[in-house]
Length: 211
Image 1: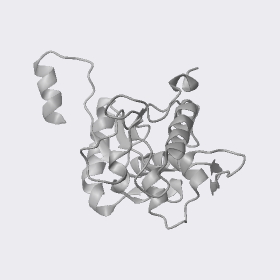
Image 2 (image 1 turned 180 degrees about the horizontal axis):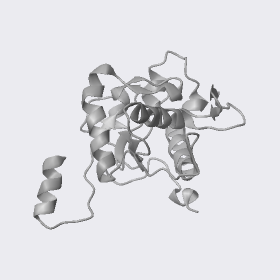
Image 3 (image 1 turned 120 degrees about the vertical axis):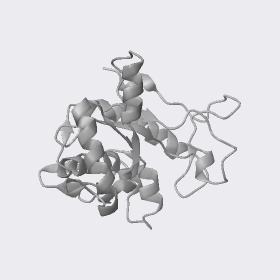
Image 4 (image 1 turned 180 degrees about the vertical axis):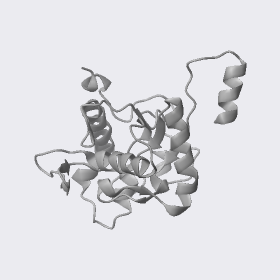
């Protein structure tokens, strides 16, 4: 990042933040969200990294995948909680963390990362969700119905922020545009909103999150 920033400066390019993306595997603790902390192994990299980003006013990019937490939980994570399903039939379970109530895992993962950043000594660092999505086939809980529900729920949800950052819209990117039939068989082939021939797998209403 320092080399890229130096190269941009040398080229006379201003106003382009340099950052990096991390998986939530950098977290050694994430439950409850307020106890989020980087793992001992990750801290040696993450602490100076988030300090550097803070000094530059650049965000940290985080890949957030409730699907993998759900599918690997052995039934311990409710499907509705992972899908941001809200109230109603098949409602999500909730997690109470001090004065905060979490109705979905997406918010819990983001806020656990906020807590980890703060425990690393940095306050107010912006997080951007650089990837999130749900597979439409290839594994437990992977269906067109669930993928459509998850991604549409994310679009509707992120403008409202998280319990730790209420009212602050969270910049979020869905993964992925296309199914990738060149990947190994399983869920990794099926995160796309479209097939490789550009036919729609399911519809996402991106206007639903607009003010």
